Length: 481
Image 1 (cartoon, helix red, strand yellow):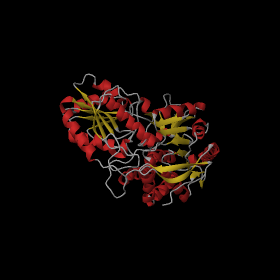
Image 2 (cartoon, helix red, strand yellow; image 1 turned 120 degrees about the vertical axis):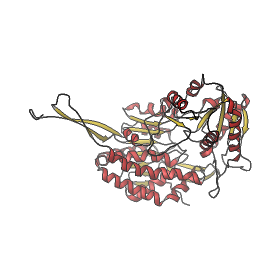
Image 3 (cartoon, one colour; image 1 turned 180 degrees about the horizontal axis):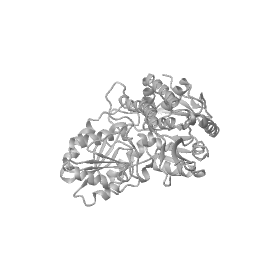
Image 4 (tube, one colour; image 1 turned 135 degrees about the horizontal axis):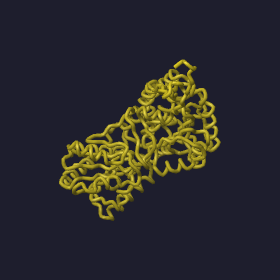
């Protein structure tokens, strides 16, 4: 298969000043070599976006909807192509690539419809001498920095609201997974999207990446990534006043009470933790289990870990794919080994799965007796590790669950006592509280609290990150009131 390799800048598919070799983490073999932007490429992209803003922001909502529908239709026609790109660049199991594809298709449709529901609105005048209208306008040029764990889903969360709001957007995908993003660039070129409305470039130059955020041209900078990356981008972006929308790291707690449905709890903890090799921002990290059910719940989690299938085969039912690269594999392995040395019990996994001699695979892992002093407790693991932490009574549970250096993105509660669930939901400092289940969709807000981010992805709330409000006040003629 010929994978895409060109950047999409100024309405054209172009080579860059450099190149990036993309390897499949499941095979460790090179998939393709893609164009990489240098500082001059970035400056050109910024100028194209600035030039596009006046016309694109004034384009009617109907016309923007038409462009988004054209792009959505091309996405649908190229489903296998887009999913194959993800399958190879991330080593993601084939079935899991569907979520990325569906997210892009759904985002383009959802925001094309949702922008029409945003209406300007009037304000009452206290003295009756003026009329006042609040008008929504596009904020300006947007720059999006994307994480690698869901290549098209992350792109979808940005391209949909930006196009709908009238903001030209420059998308910088991760160096680990630029191929599917470049494929979207091909589709934008195919439909003849106006120059500069969407641009897609990867870069392995820190200077070029910082040029994107330091430039005075962007009005909006949006990110899916780590808290540390978010802080860095905000520092470099402080050359001018900008709006920020960031979905950052988290260290999700899970509270499993003695009266919980343990089958459901184990299914969800293991399902979210082992899919995508645990490389999910909302993945359960610290699983607090009430002492009376610890043994039973542990057995259920270990059973699921041992039954999970690991590998890379388009025609097989695979639970867990590879970690993104060798660096990630070594980091996760060290977290496990250090925890065991410090007294944690390794109940499943902990190393390379039997029979897989290449690729960055790590067997689904279960650690028991994890303590708050361990790095696997303190850090967002971003790997297929379930860390079990027993608790007796509820005196310190809320405090321990909220003890999270990485901020609060998601927390899980499992109990049949709805009053207890609501009490803990009120006390947990996380942007999303999932009770006895888990649900994400394009129409549901996704965002964190504190160090886990600013603003929201998904839902109508995401449009607020790309729109500004302007007040238009008109004096009434004397006697007209």
